[in-house]
Length: 148
Image (cartoon, rainbow, N blue to C red; front, side):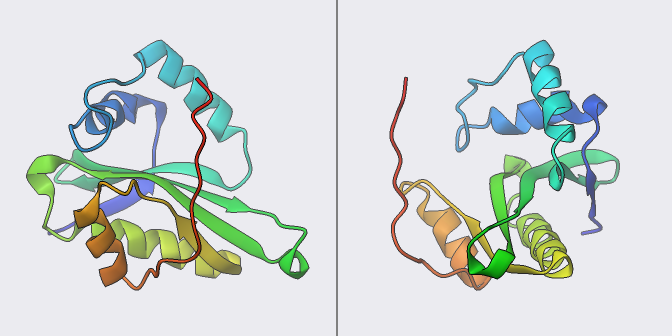
């Protein structure tokens, strides 16, 4: 499948929100477009933090966020953080997620990151198999605290 991965534009937000609304992501509970546009504008002001989309035949079929972070530890080596990975349900199993993750990892390597991390909800067993199949390993523990 021919996939093009590029930085998202504000005009892509409707499609991105639709992807986030899928049952295995946010169960239809997504931001409204005006709020998403405001956040997208703020994200664009951060250095090395971008939302990406995967396109196939002009349609957006996947998205992810990638932040390259500066660190004071590890002798100042950069690290990558991948978030909000999702592929359209009718396009899953076609290698789109793999291409998105290769793009993200290649970007991290090009920037000189010493590691790249992502987290995945414990319930997403298929996603865990997918990430492990790409070479990610489970490392340590991930902790969360609901602040609502």
